[in-house]
Amino acid sequence: GVTTIHNPSAGTNQIMAAAEMARAGRVVAPRIFSTGTILYGATSGSTAEVNSLEDARTHIRRMAAVGAISVKSYNQPRRDQRQQILQAAREEGLQVFLEGGALFHHNMNQVQDGHTSVEHSLPLTAVYDDVLQFWGAAGTGYTPTLTVAFGGRNAEAYWYEATNVWENERLQAFHPPLTLEARTRRREMAPPEENEHIQTAATAKAIFEAGVPVSLGAHGQMNGLDAHWELWSFVQGGMSPAQALEVATLSGARNLGMDHEIGSLEPGKLADLIVLEANPLDDI
Image 1: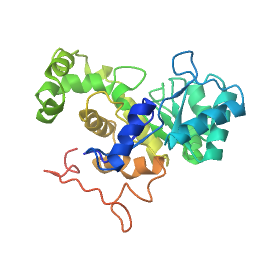
Image 2: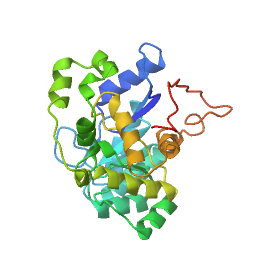
Image 3: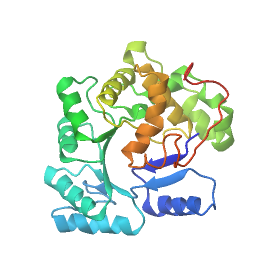
């Protein structure tokens, strides 16, 4: 049921090849967009050193040349480094998505500096009017990835407990039984008050209602099914089914700057139709 994806952390060679094959009709796939390999601030195999604007321009131009529409600014430790990536990306017309990093003070100056979107949940389970007004005026998007939410038990753990994932026939058709059953049959259990993802979803609802383009982001935790977990979790946090569906469609498209082409059924847009067996407004 997913018609467009934006992968903000993927191996450049794999994801760009997959995107080209999808565009050419060589594979059955959604529209695929990606940052390619992250611009990582820590020392690793994918470190992107940014100590000047010219450093940032080098990385941005390199990613643009392989087909990226965006880059992932991933835990660059200093604010000036993140700002240099932003300036270089603006020059090349690329978007900049952020690793939230579970650092609230970073999240707020990332919003202030004008990034495209903060990826991952805030590390706080509740925010107040100062954050809502500030973020709502900024234009920066938010992808809370409730499936792997910070700060407590996440939605992935909850849905493994609440549903018999290994019995899902569509999942069985594409997922090797050995790895599917190893993760899903031996489930952890917890009292309801431990399910922190519900409060995180409630905070996402408040941020959405403040005017922020909130997106559905499933983090690739369980093939295909995790997008539905994310959708259901937004409703657990108080969104109406219609609001959750907007997050999964038009709001997500707006966050990607693609709402003039996708995300809703309107004259002149690409018509993505999914035929359902029941009305999700009655039961998400």
